[in-house]
Amino acid sequence: MAAGTQPTTRARGRGRPPRLSRERILESALELVKRDGLGALSMRRLAEELDAGTMTLYGYFRGKDELLDALVDVSSARSKRLRELGDGPWRQQLRELILAVREVLAEHPWEVELRMRRPLVSPGAMRVPEAGLQILQAAGLAPAEAARAFRTLFLYTFGFSGFGDPDDPERVRRETMAQVAPLPADEYPAVSAAINELAATMAGEEQFEFGLDLLLDGIEARLGR
Amino acid sequence: MAAGTQPTTRARGRGRPPRLSRERILESALELVKRDGLGALSMRRLAEELDAGTMTLYGYFRGKDELLDALVDVSSARSKRLRELGDGPWRQQLRELILAVREVLAEHPWEVELRMRRPLVSPGAMRVPEAGLQILQAAGLAPAEAARAFRTLFLYTFGFSGFGDPDDPERVRRETMAQVAPLPADEYPAVSAAINELAATMAGEEQFEFGLDLLLDGIEARLGR
DNA sequence: ACCTGAACACCGTTCAAGT
DNA sequence: ACCTGAACACCGTTCAAGT
Image (cartoon, rainbow over the protein chains, first blue to last red):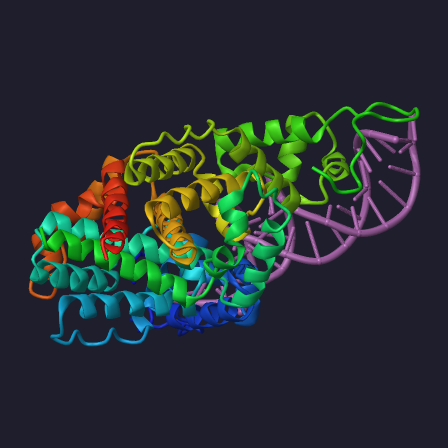
């Protein structure tokens, strides 16, 4: 929200008041991305949607990268407030936290690619790790282990979401089966015998929750030591 | 390797023999991507590198997407042959398999983005799941559980690799610390107290192995039931 | 103080040729 | 049979102005 070059909103002194604002631009960008995908977001098209010259945007953002960073930022900030952490058992608290993260990424799949390209560490983005660390430390893990365990959950969630096809999970499964079916059974015995089971893992929240529970099992096993 | 439109290599009948081949084009593309990154790979630049007109490439590939698919395919196929699965304990076998996958992605980070964009199910790509399923079923998991567990390992590996910065892990850690340090300690107590531990999770193979071992612990816990 | 068109250096791909 | 330039519809961004 800082940076020197953009027009001031409260125009001190006189001169025309700005027609646009970072907020209004980001609003429009968010809408555009939601409607037509990340690939459709260009400076030119965004400006057109705002009835402005392309170069006007450069008065508010240094360039497209800065705009994209800000976009991730507002999108995360606006996401449904994380449910208050109840004081249930650590496992249930952590499970709900990660499911909330997953929910956000399912709703804004474009965030995955963007955040992998340029990892975000804005204050807002740190609320989730903060909550995760608190839960894991309260459960009994040392800080270093808690940090690594949380990071693992985080990476799994992004990995899943990066492959996730929100449009049509059923299609993904059908395509997988179609591509696995012709494989020679003697070279691929396990895969051939488990086509349906394999296809079922390619999309859908059941798979996400399986992996999440597997990780929670792993953490639980370490606590028991 | 099929598809109708490209020039035949063994030019049956007469006519000029083709100057290029899918193989030679992919070779050049691989080199270009390795040298300058995925963003630098354009049809125009690739053609120039091959001393050919841009449109010549369209005689060999229907378009850029098909070229990218083929690129992932040859790159995976060429990867160091997966170590023969010894007949050690399942945990060690699976660990080595996943580490081999990670090694490939660390060497070809651009594969992560491409494979997330268009999941690949070529015969070659199925060798890894085949091995994974075999190990997990031999260890005692039912097919459905084995498939889901393998998928979890796979997704975690891609998630890690998507965030992985092969250039300079140390820089990533320093940047994380710089961005976390100014956070108010009363709002972010756990994060503030564990800055170093948190930064350590942001890059590096130790973090990858921690997560991998955590998942293996989870699997082991399920086998014990 | 704020906005913007023209221009530059790029894209992928269609079309209609050239040899 | 194989190759390719021109053209079209796009990009992000710099520069030099316009009000």
